[in-house]
Amino acid sequence: MKAHIVTLPGDGVGPEVTAAAVAVLHAVAEHFGHEFTFEEHAIGGCAIDAHGEPLPKASLEACKKADAVLLGAVGGPKWSDPNAPVRPEQGLLALRAALGVYANLRPLQVHPALARLSPLKEEKLKHVDVLFVRELTGGAYFGAKTRTADTATDECKYTVAEIERVTRRAFDLARQRRRHVTSVDKANVLETSRLWRSTVQRIAAEYPDVKLEHQLVDSMAMLLLTQPGRYDVVVTENLFGDILTDEAAALAGSLGLLPSASLGDGFNGLYEPIHGSAPDIAGQNVANPTGAILSVALLLRHSLELEEEANAVEAAIDEVLRDGPHTRDIGGTAGTAEVQAAVLTALEEHASNSAAFFSGARACG
Image (tube, rainbow, N blue to C red; front, side, top):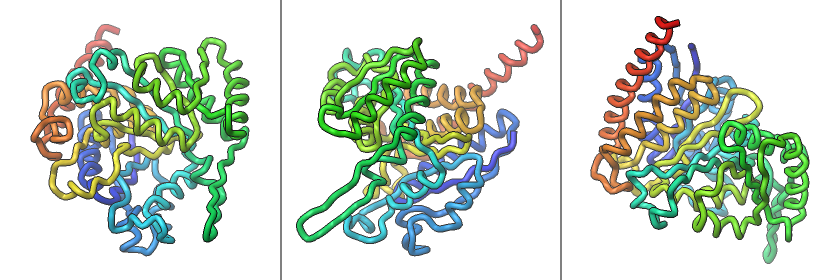
């Protein structure tokens, strides 16, 4: 297979973890006989410094033409003034809107070897396997905004069509898992949530084989910490999803472990670790590349439809999380480069085993 991938390393540790992710993609191409080409562009704070805007036209046009986009992180203290007219996160929001990636997938699993790092007791972490589906292009982040000397408003607006498409994506994914969807809203207070709930309820009728339950966002915040193992697919609006997924990430033991995929109706998706730019450790070779590498697995699965290759990357990460080496955020002393090397070694083994299996299967057939 041939694929063209645009990389947006961004700010802080973004370039370091993106480099590790690209190294894994090169290894996948080598081991499985693919041809991946890469094109790097600027986004975020570094783009503001170099081009005066957080998403230069060249970056956007390249992303639109790519088969997939791999992003590192944006932001940092240099650009952190919330009153500044131009900010790094504006580039990310604009990119999501331009690509039409309305469903943000954030899988959460707690690796047995790292359960001790979670703030919850280990017995509460058994069987935790949640897929969050966050609506990504609507709500308060994209609504009209006003500001006067003593008032401010942020419009939270949703259309039926926006809710329908992300809901169908959540139910389709649930059919591939344990067939249980939890929809999170604030329907006892917010009119947008009432529209959300009624729309989700109607779409659920199209999926009689999938169980639906509703939760208010405040109770869901509590239940994620007290009963995390009961959830399968969780679908919610933009702001609620942003908050709940960061809360849930703490269950895994580190933000550095978790990937994400932002998908629309086509195959081109935006893939990034959920962590921020971590400027305090940038350039020190200590950032955890796991989230970025697992984002590569999502890229292979969803944009390139390479399931075998995605499984091999995930198996390699599983091995390294089990046996080490580990970066310091999960109790180890290894650097980014050392973890990258260990993943590449494990990937080579899993790719070889996979090739041998399929070769034997063909011979038997």
